[in-house]
Amino acid sequence: MFISGQTPRTLDGKRLVGVPFEQQARLALDNLEAITRAVGLSLRDAVKVDVFLRDLKDRAAFDAIYANYIGETPPARTLVQSNFNEFDVEVSAVLLDQGAMHAPC
Image (cartoon, rainbow, N blue to C red; front, side):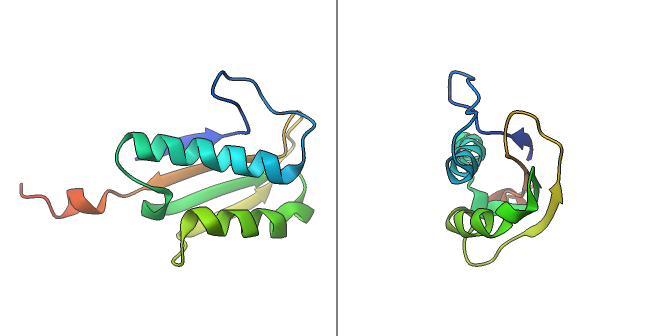
């Protein structure tokens, strides 16, 4: 499953602007997790995660929050700086359904 970049948006589509980075990071990851759960998976099924931060000084804060979502065995990850205008973080992921790999053909 390929999930495109999730940003700090509420369920009604409103972007969180001007709120602390930690709140933005949690909402972006909550949005990503909600999509994975809708198909019976979890972020713990991620094999690749891409993280885009406006300011790389937020990396440590992001990593601390991210660890709560991803588990003890993190997937491959790319983290890059981006020129966002309205928000501080975006996260995308590729997930693998482990159960589908063992399903009979």
